[in-house]
Image: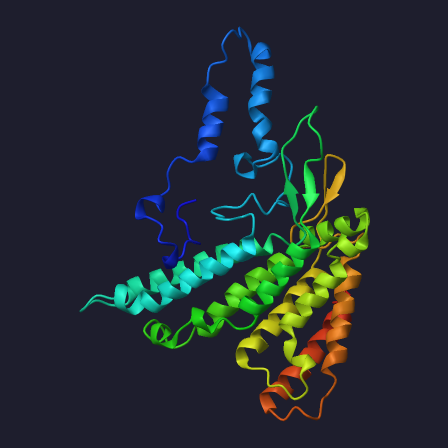
Length: 356
Protein backbone atom coordinates (compact mmCIF):
# COMPACT_ATOMS: atom_id res chain seq x y z
CA UNK A 1 0.00 0.00 0.00
CA UNK A 2 1.15 3.53 -0.67
CA UNK A 3 0.00 4.76 2.71
CA UNK A 4 -1.80 3.63 5.84
CA UNK A 5 -5.18 5.35 5.58
CA UNK A 6 -6.81 3.67 8.59
CA UNK A 7 -4.48 4.81 11.39
CA UNK A 8 -6.06 7.47 13.63
CA UNK A 9 -4.43 10.41 15.45
CA UNK A 10 -5.25 8.90 18.83
CA UNK A 11 -3.29 5.76 17.90
CA UNK A 12 -0.06 7.75 18.32
CA UNK A 13 1.72 5.67 15.69
CA UNK A 14 5.29 6.98 15.12
CA UNK A 15 5.74 8.73 11.78
CA UNK A 16 8.41 6.27 10.62
CA UNK A 17 5.86 3.44 10.87
CA UNK A 18 3.47 5.24 8.51
CA UNK A 19 5.94 5.17 5.63
CA UNK A 20 5.78 2.05 3.41
CA UNK A 21 8.70 -0.33 3.91
CA UNK A 22 9.65 -3.99 3.69
CA UNK A 23 7.10 -6.08 5.59
CA UNK A 24 6.40 -9.70 6.60
CA UNK A 25 5.12 -10.77 3.18
CA UNK A 26 8.12 -9.24 1.41
CA UNK A 27 10.53 -11.15 3.65
CA UNK A 28 8.49 -14.35 3.23
CA UNK A 29 8.48 -14.11 -0.59
CA UNK A 30 12.18 -13.19 -0.81
CA UNK A 31 13.10 -16.12 1.44
CA UNK A 32 11.09 -18.58 -0.65
CA UNK A 33 12.44 -17.24 -3.91
CA UNK A 34 16.12 -16.75 -3.08
CA UNK A 35 17.22 -18.52 0.09
CA UNK A 36 19.58 -21.42 -0.76
CA UNK A 37 18.41 -24.95 -0.03
CA UNK A 38 21.50 -26.77 1.33
CA UNK A 39 22.31 -30.03 -0.42
CA UNK A 40 19.74 -29.61 -3.21
CA UNK A 41 21.29 -30.15 -6.62
CA UNK A 42 18.18 -29.57 -8.76
CA UNK A 43 14.78 -27.88 -8.72
CA UNK A 44 13.13 -31.22 -7.99
CA UNK A 45 15.33 -31.72 -4.93
CA UNK A 46 14.37 -28.24 -3.67
CA UNK A 47 10.64 -28.82 -3.94
CA UNK A 48 10.06 -30.60 -0.61
CA UNK A 49 11.80 -27.80 1.30
CA UNK A 50 10.04 -25.07 -0.67
CA UNK A 51 6.65 -26.65 0.00
CA UNK A 52 7.47 -26.79 3.72
CA UNK A 53 8.35 -23.08 3.66
CA UNK A 54 4.88 -22.34 2.25
CA UNK A 55 3.08 -24.02 5.17
CA UNK A 56 2.74 -20.80 7.26
CA UNK A 57 0.42 -19.45 4.54
CA UNK A 58 -2.24 -21.91 5.70
CA UNK A 59 -2.67 -20.11 9.04
CA UNK A 60 -1.24 -16.62 8.38
CA UNK A 61 -3.37 -14.72 5.87
CA UNK A 62 -0.97 -11.81 5.30
CA UNK A 63 1.65 -14.20 3.92
CA UNK A 64 -0.62 -15.13 0.99
CA UNK A 65 -0.63 -13.65 -2.48
CA UNK A 66 -3.50 -13.70 -4.96
CA UNK A 67 -4.85 -17.05 -6.07
CA UNK A 68 -4.96 -18.08 -9.69
CA UNK A 69 -8.27 -17.93 -11.56
CA UNK A 70 -10.19 -15.95 -8.94
CA UNK A 71 -11.63 -13.83 -11.79
CA UNK A 72 -12.05 -10.73 -9.65
CA UNK A 73 -14.12 -12.51 -7.01
CA UNK A 74 -11.69 -12.15 -4.10
CA UNK A 75 -12.09 -8.93 -2.06
CA UNK A 76 -8.57 -9.50 -0.74
CA UNK A 77 -7.04 -8.97 -4.19
CA UNK A 78 -7.52 -5.22 -4.37
CA UNK A 79 -5.24 -2.28 -5.03
CA UNK A 80 -4.14 -0.42 -1.90
CA UNK A 81 -6.55 -2.16 0.47
CA UNK A 82 -5.35 -1.67 4.04
CA UNK A 83 -7.06 -3.90 6.56
CA UNK A 84 -8.76 -6.10 3.97
CA UNK A 85 -9.63 -8.58 6.71
CA UNK A 86 -12.49 -6.19 7.53
CA UNK A 87 -13.09 -3.77 4.67
CA UNK A 88 -16.06 -2.13 6.40
CA UNK A 89 -14.07 -1.29 9.52
CA UNK A 90 -11.08 -0.15 7.43
CA UNK A 91 -13.21 2.10 5.22
CA UNK A 92 -14.98 3.51 8.28
CA UNK A 93 -11.61 4.60 9.66
CA UNK A 94 -10.44 5.76 6.26
CA UNK A 95 -13.54 7.92 5.89
CA UNK A 96 -12.87 9.57 9.24
CA UNK A 97 -9.43 10.55 7.98
CA UNK A 98 -10.78 11.85 4.68
CA UNK A 99 -13.27 14.02 6.55
CA UNK A 100 -10.36 15.44 8.57
CA UNK A 101 -8.52 16.20 5.33
CA UNK A 102 -11.62 17.84 3.87
CA UNK A 103 -11.79 20.17 6.87
CA UNK A 104 -8.16 21.17 6.23
CA UNK A 105 -8.40 21.90 2.49
CA UNK A 106 -8.99 25.64 2.67
CA UNK A 107 -6.19 26.25 5.16
CA UNK A 108 -3.68 23.81 3.68
CA UNK A 109 -3.98 24.16 -0.10
CA UNK A 110 -4.77 27.66 -1.48
CA UNK A 111 -1.89 30.15 -1.64
CA UNK A 112 -2.23 33.92 -1.47
CA UNK A 113 -2.45 35.52 -4.88
CA UNK A 114 -2.94 32.22 -6.76
CA UNK A 115 -6.03 30.61 -8.28
CA UNK A 116 -7.82 27.54 -6.91
CA UNK A 117 -6.54 24.99 -9.42
CA UNK A 118 -4.55 23.13 -6.75
CA UNK A 119 -7.60 23.10 -4.49
CA UNK A 120 -9.62 21.47 -7.26
CA UNK A 121 -6.94 18.85 -7.88
CA UNK A 122 -6.62 17.92 -4.20
CA UNK A 123 -10.40 17.81 -3.81
CA UNK A 124 -10.69 15.47 -6.80
CA UNK A 125 -7.93 13.26 -5.41
CA UNK A 126 -9.72 13.05 -2.07
CA UNK A 127 -12.94 11.94 -3.79
CA UNK A 128 -10.97 9.40 -5.81
CA UNK A 129 -9.43 7.92 -2.66
CA UNK A 130 -12.86 7.59 -1.05
CA UNK A 131 -14.17 5.87 -4.18
CA UNK A 132 -11.26 3.40 -3.99
CA UNK A 133 -12.06 2.58 -0.37
CA UNK A 134 -15.76 2.16 -1.18
CA UNK A 135 -14.70 -0.32 -3.83
CA UNK A 136 -13.09 -2.45 -1.13
CA UNK A 137 -16.49 -2.67 0.61
CA UNK A 138 -18.40 -3.30 -2.60
CA UNK A 139 -16.14 -6.25 -3.43
CA UNK A 140 -17.48 -8.17 -0.43
CA UNK A 141 -20.88 -8.64 -2.09
CA UNK A 142 -20.87 -11.91 -4.00
CA UNK A 143 -17.22 -12.33 -3.05
CA UNK A 144 -15.11 -15.45 -2.56
CA UNK A 145 -12.08 -15.50 -0.27
CA UNK A 146 -9.26 -17.17 -2.20
CA UNK A 147 -6.34 -19.18 -0.85
CA UNK A 148 -3.88 -20.59 -3.37
CA UNK A 149 -3.42 -24.34 -2.80
CA UNK A 150 -2.06 -27.32 -4.66
CA UNK A 151 -2.45 -31.08 -4.57
CA UNK A 152 -1.62 -32.45 -1.12
CA UNK A 153 -2.98 -29.44 0.74
CA UNK A 154 -6.32 -29.73 2.50
CA UNK A 155 -9.33 -27.60 1.63
CA UNK A 156 -10.59 -25.71 -1.40
CA UNK A 157 -9.23 -22.56 -3.04
CA UNK A 158 -12.42 -20.48 -2.86
CA UNK A 159 -14.78 -19.92 0.07
CA UNK A 160 -17.80 -17.57 -0.13
CA UNK A 161 -17.61 -14.41 1.94
CA UNK A 162 -19.96 -14.91 4.89
CA UNK A 163 -23.54 -13.70 4.71
CA UNK A 164 -22.89 -11.39 7.67
CA UNK A 165 -19.98 -9.64 5.93
CA UNK A 166 -21.86 -9.24 2.66
CA UNK A 167 -24.96 -7.83 4.34
CA UNK A 168 -22.86 -5.48 6.48
CA UNK A 169 -21.20 -4.18 3.31
CA UNK A 170 -24.55 -3.21 1.76
CA UNK A 171 -25.69 -1.63 5.02
CA UNK A 172 -22.47 0.41 5.11
CA UNK A 173 -22.99 1.63 1.54
CA UNK A 174 -26.62 2.49 2.27
CA UNK A 175 -25.65 4.53 5.33
CA UNK A 176 -22.52 6.21 4.01
CA UNK A 177 -22.94 6.58 0.25
CA UNK A 178 -26.58 6.31 -0.76
CA UNK A 179 -27.61 8.45 2.21
CA UNK A 180 -26.21 11.63 0.65
CA UNK A 181 -22.56 12.19 1.73
CA UNK A 182 -22.72 15.99 1.71
CA UNK A 183 -19.40 16.19 3.57
CA UNK A 184 -17.84 15.28 0.22
CA UNK A 185 -18.88 18.59 -1.35
CA UNK A 186 -18.61 21.41 1.24
CA UNK A 187 -19.94 24.60 -0.28
CA UNK A 188 -17.02 26.73 0.87
CA UNK A 189 -14.85 24.51 -1.34
CA UNK A 190 -17.31 23.90 -4.19
CA UNK A 191 -18.07 27.57 -4.77
CA UNK A 192 -14.38 28.31 -5.09
CA UNK A 193 -14.20 25.78 -7.94
CA UNK A 194 -17.36 26.22 -10.02
CA UNK A 195 -20.93 27.57 -9.95
CA UNK A 196 -22.46 24.09 -10.18
CA UNK A 197 -21.17 20.54 -9.93
CA UNK A 198 -21.77 19.25 -6.40
CA UNK A 199 -24.78 17.16 -7.44
CA UNK A 200 -22.81 15.49 -10.22
CA UNK A 201 -19.78 14.82 -8.00
CA UNK A 202 -21.90 12.91 -5.48
CA UNK A 203 -23.91 11.17 -8.19
CA UNK A 204 -20.70 10.08 -9.90
CA UNK A 205 -19.55 8.23 -6.78
CA UNK A 206 -22.99 6.72 -6.23
CA UNK A 207 -23.47 5.63 -9.81
CA UNK A 208 -20.04 4.00 -9.92
CA UNK A 209 -20.84 1.84 -6.89
CA UNK A 210 -24.35 1.02 -8.17
CA UNK A 211 -22.83 -0.12 -11.46
CA UNK A 212 -20.39 -2.27 -9.55
CA UNK A 213 -23.00 -3.77 -7.24
CA UNK A 214 -25.29 -4.66 -10.15
CA UNK A 215 -22.48 -6.08 -12.24
CA UNK A 216 -23.76 -9.28 -13.91
CA UNK A 217 -20.68 -11.21 -12.76
CA UNK A 218 -21.43 -10.25 -9.15
CA UNK A 219 -25.08 -11.26 -9.52
CA UNK A 220 -23.98 -14.58 -11.01
CA UNK A 221 -21.70 -15.25 -8.03
CA UNK A 222 -24.51 -14.50 -5.59
CA UNK A 223 -26.69 -17.05 -7.34
CA UNK A 224 -23.81 -19.53 -7.45
CA UNK A 225 -23.39 -19.15 -3.69
CA UNK A 226 -27.10 -19.75 -3.16
CA UNK A 227 -27.25 -22.76 -5.48
CA UNK A 228 -24.27 -24.51 -3.86
CA UNK A 229 -24.83 -23.60 -0.20
CA UNK A 230 -25.30 -26.28 2.43
CA UNK A 231 -27.95 -24.14 4.08
CA UNK A 232 -29.72 -21.05 2.74
CA UNK A 233 -29.82 -19.53 6.23
CA UNK A 234 -26.10 -18.84 5.93
CA UNK A 235 -26.30 -17.45 2.39
CA UNK A 236 -26.72 -13.85 1.28
CA UNK A 237 -29.23 -14.56 -1.44
CA UNK A 238 -29.56 -12.34 -4.49
CA UNK A 239 -33.17 -11.55 -3.54
CA UNK A 240 -32.07 -10.35 -0.09
CA UNK A 241 -29.26 -8.27 -1.57
CA UNK A 242 -31.57 -6.54 -4.05
CA UNK A 243 -34.16 -5.86 -1.35
CA UNK A 244 -31.48 -4.37 0.93
CA UNK A 245 -30.22 -2.19 -1.92
CA UNK A 246 -33.74 -1.03 -2.75
CA UNK A 247 -34.31 -0.08 0.89
CA UNK A 248 -31.21 2.12 0.79
CA UNK A 249 -31.84 3.77 -2.57
CA UNK A 250 -35.61 4.23 -2.23
CA UNK A 251 -35.84 4.83 1.52
CA UNK A 252 -38.44 7.59 1.16
CA UNK A 253 -41.00 5.17 -0.31
CA UNK A 254 -41.40 3.55 3.09
CA UNK A 255 -42.09 6.94 4.70
CA UNK A 256 -45.50 8.31 3.60
CA UNK A 257 -45.29 11.96 2.61
CA UNK A 258 -41.48 12.08 2.72
CA UNK A 259 -39.78 14.65 0.50
CA UNK A 260 -37.27 13.27 -2.01
CA UNK A 261 -34.58 15.93 -2.33
CA UNK A 262 -32.54 16.62 -5.51
CA UNK A 263 -29.60 14.48 -4.36
CA UNK A 264 -31.82 11.46 -3.81
CA UNK A 265 -33.83 12.04 -6.97
CA UNK A 266 -30.59 11.83 -8.93
CA UNK A 267 -29.65 8.58 -7.17
CA UNK A 268 -33.02 6.94 -7.80
CA UNK A 269 -33.00 7.83 -11.48
CA UNK A 270 -29.46 6.48 -11.76
CA UNK A 271 -30.61 3.17 -10.27
CA UNK A 272 -33.36 2.86 -12.88
CA UNK A 273 -30.98 3.83 -15.68
CA UNK A 274 -28.54 1.09 -14.66
CA UNK A 275 -31.29 -1.51 -14.36
CA UNK A 276 -32.54 -0.47 -17.80
CA UNK A 277 -29.04 -0.95 -19.20
CA UNK A 278 -28.95 -4.43 -17.73
CA UNK A 279 -32.41 -5.46 -18.93
CA UNK A 280 -32.63 -3.80 -22.31
CA UNK A 281 -29.03 -3.45 -23.40
CA UNK A 282 -28.15 -5.46 -26.49
CA UNK A 283 -26.09 -8.50 -25.46
CA UNK A 284 -23.15 -9.50 -27.66
CA UNK A 285 -22.21 -13.05 -26.67
CA UNK A 286 -18.80 -14.36 -27.63
CA UNK A 287 -17.75 -17.99 -27.62
CA UNK A 288 -14.36 -18.44 -25.97
CA UNK A 289 -12.87 -21.90 -25.46
CA UNK A 290 -16.28 -23.47 -25.99
CA UNK A 291 -18.03 -21.29 -23.38
CA UNK A 292 -20.32 -18.33 -24.02
CA UNK A 293 -19.32 -15.12 -22.24
CA UNK A 294 -20.96 -11.70 -22.09
CA UNK A 295 -19.59 -8.21 -21.48
CA UNK A 296 -19.41 -7.07 -17.87
CA UNK A 297 -22.49 -4.86 -18.33
CA UNK A 298 -24.69 -7.41 -20.10
CA UNK A 299 -26.80 -10.05 -18.44
CA UNK A 300 -26.49 -13.73 -19.06
CA UNK A 301 -29.92 -14.51 -20.53
CA UNK A 302 -29.87 -17.94 -18.93
CA UNK A 303 -29.74 -16.98 -15.21
CA UNK A 304 -32.22 -15.41 -12.78
CA UNK A 305 -30.93 -11.85 -12.86
CA UNK A 306 -33.39 -10.56 -15.45
CA UNK A 307 -36.39 -11.90 -13.54
CA UNK A 308 -35.09 -10.60 -10.21
CA UNK A 309 -34.47 -7.08 -11.55
CA UNK A 310 -37.92 -6.95 -13.14
CA UNK A 311 -39.40 -8.06 -9.82
CA UNK A 312 -37.54 -5.23 -8.06
CA UNK A 313 -38.97 -2.71 -10.51
CA UNK A 314 -42.50 -3.95 -9.85
CA UNK A 315 -41.89 -3.71 -6.10
CA UNK A 316 -40.71 -0.10 -6.47
CA UNK A 317 -43.71 0.79 -8.63
CA UNK A 318 -46.06 -0.74 -6.06
CA UNK A 319 -44.41 1.27 -3.28
CA UNK A 320 -44.76 4.50 -5.22
CA UNK A 321 -48.49 4.34 -5.90
CA UNK A 322 -49.82 7.88 -5.75
CA UNK A 323 -49.71 8.71 -2.03
CA UNK A 324 -52.01 11.61 -1.23
CA UNK A 325 -49.69 12.54 1.64
CA UNK A 326 -47.02 13.75 -0.82
CA UNK A 327 -47.50 17.51 -0.99
CA UNK A 328 -44.07 18.56 -2.26
CA UNK A 329 -44.54 19.32 -5.95
CA UNK A 330 -41.03 18.27 -7.03
CA UNK A 331 -41.38 14.99 -5.15
CA UNK A 332 -44.72 14.22 -6.76
CA UNK A 333 -43.32 14.98 -10.21
CA UNK A 334 -40.34 12.74 -9.45
CA UNK A 335 -42.50 9.83 -8.30
CA UNK A 336 -44.68 10.12 -11.39
CA UNK A 337 -41.53 10.14 -13.50
CA UNK A 338 -40.23 7.02 -11.75
CA UNK A 339 -43.48 5.19 -12.51
CA UNK A 340 -43.27 6.18 -16.18
CA UNK A 341 -39.63 5.12 -16.38
CA UNK A 342 -40.36 1.75 -14.75
CA UNK A 343 -43.24 1.12 -17.15
CA UNK A 344 -40.97 1.90 -20.11
CA UNK A 345 -38.22 -0.39 -18.81
CA UNK A 346 -40.61 -3.28 -18.24
CA UNK A 347 -42.24 -2.82 -21.64
CA UNK A 348 -39.69 -1.15 -23.94
CA UNK A 349 -40.82 -0.10 -27.37
CA UNK A 350 -39.18 -2.23 -30.03
CA UNK A 351 -37.96 -0.07 -32.94
CA UNK A 352 -39.13 -1.11 -36.39
CA UNK A 353 -36.81 -3.31 -38.37
CA UNK A 354 -34.59 -1.62 -40.94
CA UNK A 355 -36.46 -0.96 -44.18
CA UNK A 356 -39.92 -1.54 -42.68
